[in-house]
Length: 117
Image 1 (cartoon, rainbow, N blue to C red):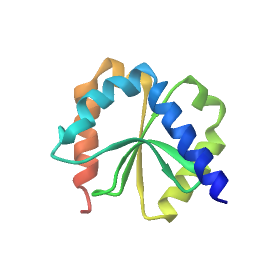
Image 2 (tube, rainbow, N blue to C red):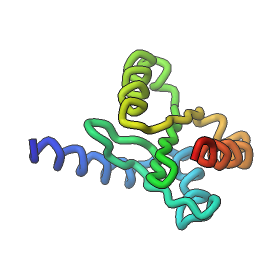
Image 3 (spheres, rainbow, N blue to C red):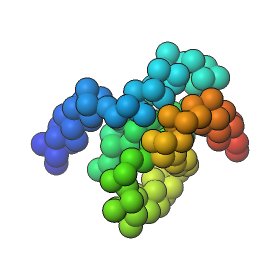
C-alpha cells in the first residue's frame, strides 16, 4: 500500500513538471493565493486519483480537460462521483476554455469556491 501511495506521489510530481499549456496558464493565476486568497495545490493526489487543482478550504477540485478526456468520459464520470462521495465538488473546463477566456474561467472558479461555504 505504501509503495502504491509513493507511486501516486511520484506521478503527481511528474505531472507538475510536465503540465499542459492550459494548466500552466491557469496556475499562473491560482498560485500564491491570488484568487480570493484561496490556496490551491496543483496535481494533488486524492485517494487513487491525481486532480489538476485542489482547494482544501473550499473542498473544490478544478479539472482542465484536454482532447484525451473525450475518450474517457466514463472514467471521468466515475472519478467525479468518487470525489463527490468524499465531500468534494468538481468543476471542469476544457483547455480551450482556459486559453480563450481565462478571466471567465477564474470568475467561475471563484464563484464555485464561495457557493455553499
